[in-house]
Image (spheres, one colour):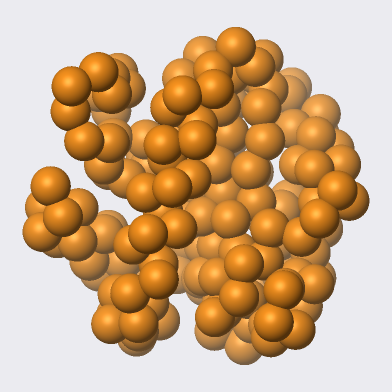
Length: 166
């Protein structure tokens, strides 16, 4: 994965989403287990150390207490800042049955983008949130992700969407 640079260029999801941090079949049944499962994807991808896993789950759960990151239309973007990462990192997970995530519209979340930025990082973190939100407002993109066959198909869809919106 390339080092993230946003000066002068458009931020792409593929710049901070590791190929191994994607799961087409989350097993989570509630908010906390969804966050834990998404963080474990970051560990498996080598984006965070296993020793930092629990602290990061607590950081993200605390952020959720301030207000749900379930933004509606089946989308959740749990996010936070942590010294456990040096660069902006993300994980993507899909839950076919959906997870009760206290979404703004009361609907279950099927598509999750978990975003973690270094504590000292404001610009890239906000740009990444904006980019993800903008892409996920597109009904066809959401539907493509929901109907993807597997992890590789999800990555392909994300990369194609990134390329279309430069």
